[in-house]
Image (cartoon, rainbow, N blue to C red):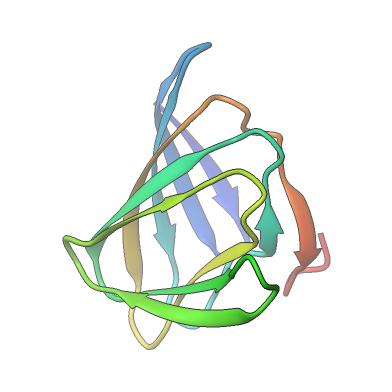
Length: 113
């Protein structure tokens, strides 16, 4: 397992092969990841703690927000614009994905990355 520090918290990569990756993301209260999409990577997340603030863009280009509670899951297909965030409380999510960890196209970022 390896820990990757991020400005919004950190992630623990607990499985990494040429076929899949497993992570636990710890998002600090009031923080969020970049608005992004992946060209190849597909991922599914499950909320373990807190309320995940999920921002998505539908096929017509409309951006909308969705809230996921502990126990709920969501699949993010390639080329889906999305952002994960935490509100007033920390959020912990488990992510399983294909292995393309560097496949990130950032559209907007609170941390100027």
